[in-house]
Structures are given as structure tokens and as C-alpha cells.
Length: 398
Ligand code: ATP
Ligand code: MG
Image (tube, rainbow, N blue to C red; front, top):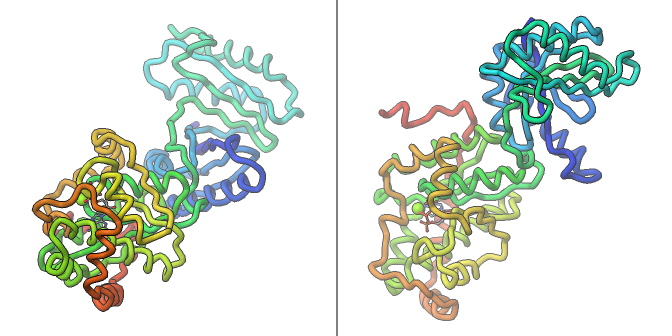
């Protein structure tokens, strides 16, 4: 006997009406996509639950994949047996024994199939008694057990689980449209992308690259970060914008104190154009209120003027440490802190305005025609599709 299924629980209760169907279909598709390389693994649904049929595959690597799928509340390894009391007893004992350092347990039977002859309460006692008689030093605790052996008696079979692993929660990627993530290579923007994905948003990424001031490695670092984000969703298109000429023009033609603000406005303008081309309806950034000169309230107000696309800023109210913690959890931190400079760290005004005003910036921008360079940047965009199979450039280079 062994665990032959992964049971997936999703937070269906939070959703209403037609959304539920879309949510579940998308979740099933996403799970299928993540497990497709394991031979014979199937994803099935029964009322309110989803199952991954392991069909002889080791559970752990599949469990690892499933733990990174948004929309899952919790997961358990499960055994499926026929609806026969003796078989259920045997499976419940197996499930209990798989858990380590157990002093207390509880059995919870759900009889969804009312044709099953033994009622839930009675079944609880039958199974509890069986487990007590076949183990030593373990007792029942119905309030706060170390392990809850859960038994779901369904029409087609009975499923037995013991351990529970928490999922990431959120909504399945693909249920909330697409957003264009401004991905810098720093710590913040990959975390912002992760959190947008958590709300069901599928992302594409845009990166502003300024060779030769920024190196090829800085670009590869961004591709690696995108690759790390694919673990939590689908493949990601990364648009690399050649930004050097525009950036040089800004720093040459505009007052130094306003260059940063104007550069950010250019990023948003170009990003919006990419959105239009790709049919994307929002931007996502790693901006955080009050971190640096470009992220004061005045600054956001002035930078935001150039687009009326919604901007998702998942980090806006977070402390830096919270962001760092998430970046550790999702595995982007080590890449983010690699020392390759991005365009914003190279072109830094000596004393940027912390309270840039819209009218001033509009006036300065009106004194120079940036449109040919914006056009050139747009035409020079290179797009790469990153999938979970794309090789990490750093592991190759190091
Ligand atoms: P991060 O850690 O994401 O780089 P940050 O704290 O360094 O953020 P800023 O440099 O002010 O903050 O950038 C704010 C946001 O602007 C970033 O989170 C990112 O979304 C976007 N951004 C900055 N530089 C770039 C770039 N070169 N390409 C794409 N987006 C960028
Ligand atoms: Mg940065």
C-alpha cells in the first residue's frame, strides 16, 4: 500500500457563481501544465476536489510542483481504496503511520456517498478503534490532535489522507487577465510579479536595458528572474527595450534634478505602448512608497501622469524586510543581489527632486522632442519567451 494520489483543496467558498467554474477549469489546466512531464500522471476532478493520480511516480517532486500553483489552499498525499470497510481500515492505518512523531490523532470521516452502509459517526469509531489497537503509545485527541486522519467516502471510492501541506492560496494564474511587469533585476520587482500572479494575473515582463552602461549579464539576470517566476505560473514573454539613446538624451537635455522623473515617465510611456500591442490592460511595478526619491507621493503623482493604465503596486505599503523575506521564499533573492548594475543605478542624478511637480516636468519635456528616440526604442525591442525549461544563464556562466 502507498499514497497514490495528491488531493488538492481549493478555496471555492470565496468565489461566486460563474467564477467558480472558470476558477476550477483554470486551476486544473495549470496543474496539468505543471505535471505534464511526469509519465502517466493524470489530473481529475470530483465535487469540490481535485486529484493528481500519481500512477507509479514518486510523490515528492510532483508535490513540489503543486505547492507552487496559485489557487490551492492545501494539499495532501492520499490513498484511494474501494468503498469497503476493511480496505478503509488498512489504508487509514497506513496513512497514520506515514506521519512522524505522532502522540495523538483523530479520525474524521465524511460520508459524501450516502449509499455507503456505515454512517460517519460509527465509521469514526470503527477506524479509531482499529488505529488504537494497531499502534502503541498513541491516543485519541479530538480537539488538538498531532494528526488528523481524514476519510472521504465518495461515490467512486474512498480517499484517505493524513498530513496536510499548505498551498500558496490566491487565484489560479490566468483568471485575472494579463499585466506587464516592469522587471528591473532588483529585489522588489520580481516579488511584485509574484504577488500579482498570486491574484491570478498572468504576466509579461519589460526590461529597460542600456548597453554598454549595463552589461549583458545585467540582462541575463533579468531573464533568470523571469525564469524563476515561471515556477509559479506560465511561460513569460520578456521584452527588452534598448534604452541607452533615450536615457542619454534625457540626461543631456533635461535638468539633472528632473532626469530621473522624466526617465520613469519614459518607461511608463513605452510600457503602455507594449501593452497596447500585446493586448495587456495594466502595468505592475515594484514601487514602494517612500523608499527612494522616485517613490515619494509627489514623484508617483508626476510619473503616473503619462499613463491612465491601472498600475498594480503590490509592495506599495510593505516594509523592505517583508519584501526581502518573500524574495527568499520564492527563490529570487540570490539572483537579485548579484552585482550587475541596471540602468537606474548607472544614470543617477546628483540631487534628484524628491517633490517633482507635473507642470515643471511637462514644461521641460515640451522643450525637446523625444518622440524619435521613443519610436526607436520601441522598434528595437527584443522579445524572448522564457519557459520553465529555459536554461539559467548564470549556471552556465559561473
Ligand atoms: P527593484 O528592486 O525592483 O529594482 P527599486 O527599489 O530599486 O526596485 P526603483 O529603482 O525606484 O526601485 O524602481 C522602481 C520600479 O521601477 C521597479 O520596481 C521596477 O518595477 C521599475 N524599474 C526600475 N528600473 C527598471 C528597468 N531597468 N527595467 C524595468 N523596470 C524597471
Ligand atoms: Mg532597482
